[in-house]
Length: 371
Image 1 (tube, rainbow, N blue to C red):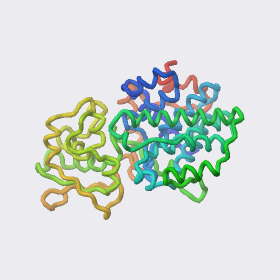
Image 2 (cartoon, helix red, strand yellow):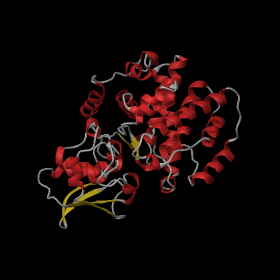
Image 3 (cartoon, rainbow, N blue to C red):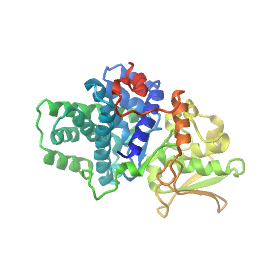
Image 4 (cartoon, one colour):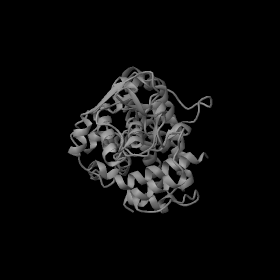
């Protein structure tokens, strides 16, 4: 198996362990649904891996489905990894085929495609028929970009994960729903395109980002560009971005709270110029000094740039350009940086993954499931 799946899973587990302390995750926990809770916890920091060709977080709904069902069934870490990989690629194919239509129509691809990924992962472990599980997940698909900057974003991902697991359980119990009409109906409703993994396509995991900063991926180039000129940049700046960055990170220079700040390019540019790149703690509140500086930063869209390319200018002079930020497939973080990210989130060292170990004994999973 490609080791990138293991990397993404361990990264998500660290995000979920830290994210379980957040209000949205604590609220989800009260409902008693372990998949909903884990799915919310793993995404609430917006620090989990992201698949740019579909602008979707592929681990966010698939990992909780595979881990929780695997733990219930007493499966091994290796079996859970296999199921997670299957769900990851099923969700990736759907998100890739449906980009940019889902995004342009106001849908949140992680949530809208996540039920399918979770259903495939859970069906693999349950031995359930895949087609009715996927069909049921498509019938229940939902999630809007309007949730960005609020607790709704992570909660709708947790709900997608839980819905996918329910779909797989129903299929395992004998429910039969034909896939073709469900897929066509999903396309009609969302504007997306139904697709399944193909050997002709590059595996989604090979184009996956492991995030370096806990905020919207479409702000990361701005953060890195600002970090290159911090201490030298003039007061008034402009940042040129691809229009998709403004779809994803649309919050202006005055975010109402830390969740909104994760989706503000001017705020995060100003934050990095003032304090350095943001950490999880940076979003506990909004910094008035940063807001004041963010007012002097103009964001300009340009379709001449790559989707995650950012250019920082001052007075017509280019100060910094980032085509692919740290954590992208073009510039992956090294093992030391990944270990440091996990340590910063969990307070613990690198995670050893033994495929033969029962997943119930897998140390990073225990704090998430409360075992």
